[in-house]
Each structure stands twice: as structure tokens, then as C-alpha cells.
Image (cartoon, rainbow, N blue to C red; front, side):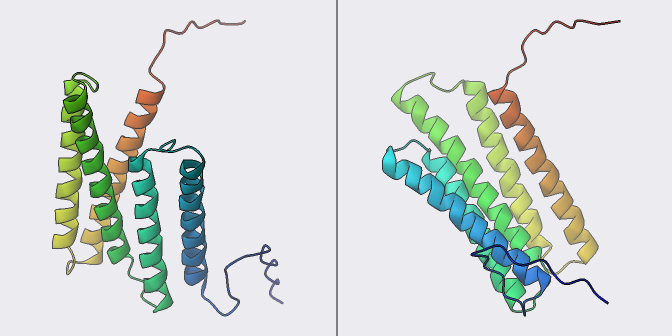
Length: 179
């Protein structure tokens, strides 16, 4: 006898006849909508408390989640188009970060270090090439598409590492050994 599924949380958007893929896509969409609403509410209370760049990233997440739900609802299990949408969102975010740094330096020179502006430009270039590579693989084998996806995910992890490093620069630390 199969175990019964646990009851859905109150307000859950899942529908009993939906596949797990559709339920997952619907849950991702609901989360993306809630995240965007949260930052928009913060900005409603305090103007620009959350930067436009961050709000745009949440909008990009929402667009990707909508695409995922649309595809899975049609029974399309090929996630490649969703991966391309994600690469497009990454490019938009990287370009915006570079443009914002450049604009900040125009308004107030040396606001952003020139080396950091160049790094942002290069990150945008990497994202552009990744997207072009992905688009070129639209008719390629699944293995080639998966290899591309792994490379893009590795690039995203690198970006996260950079962000964490910038938020938490290394500090001298002293180790105390206990015996």
C-alpha cells in the first residue's frame, strides 16, 4: 500500500492532479512572486531601500519561473528554454550592474574603483557569451546542452563567491589552539 501524500500547506498553489514537475514549477512561481512583492513593499515603505538592480533580478527570477510553469504545464519537460531565460536574466543583471557603476562614476568620480568597473564589464561580457553559446545549442544534443548549463551554473557560483567575498572581506584572524 502506497503512503498517502502529506496534506498541502494552507494556501498551497499545488493541485492534486498536477505532476510533480508542474507542482514544483508552480511553487517556484509563487516563491518568485512573493520575493518580488516583498522587495516592492520594502521600496513602497522606504523609497529605493532595495536597489533597482536587485528588484530587476527578482523580476528576472519571476520571468524564469513563469516560463518554467508554462513549459511544464504543457508537458514540455525540456528545461533548456528555461535555462536560456535564466541566462538572459543573468546578462541583464550583469549589464545593469556595469551600467550603474559607470553612471555612478560619471556623477561622482571614483565612486566605484576602475578595476571593479572593468570586472563588472567583463562579467557582463562573460554572460553575453554564455547566452550566445546557449542559443547556438538550441538544436544540439542534450549532452551538449547539459555541459553548457553546468558551465553557466559554475559561472553563477563564481559570481556568488565574488559577492560573498566583497560583502565579507578577509580580516586578520588569530587562531587559538587548545590541547
